[in-house]
Length: 82
Image (cartoon, rainbow, N blue to C red):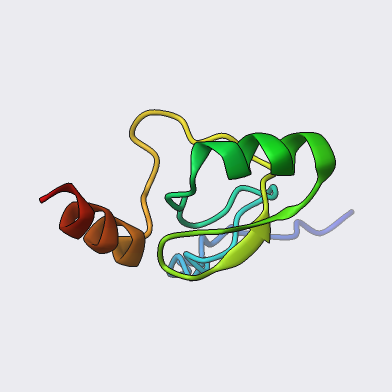
């Protein structure tokens, strides 16, 4: 006679520890304010742009409405609008 083997399944809860600064693609954490002529030049020629906050980078993505904006760029932009 063959003996019975008892098995059980237990679910282990793990906290969500994903890093907020990383994404599964190359989408930046924040989008920055940049002069329009710099955006076009960077997109066409691959040149680096300078954001209002001072960060430099090549333009690779276009921000969609509701995308997170760099707080430093937002602060500078608001001060220029007054």
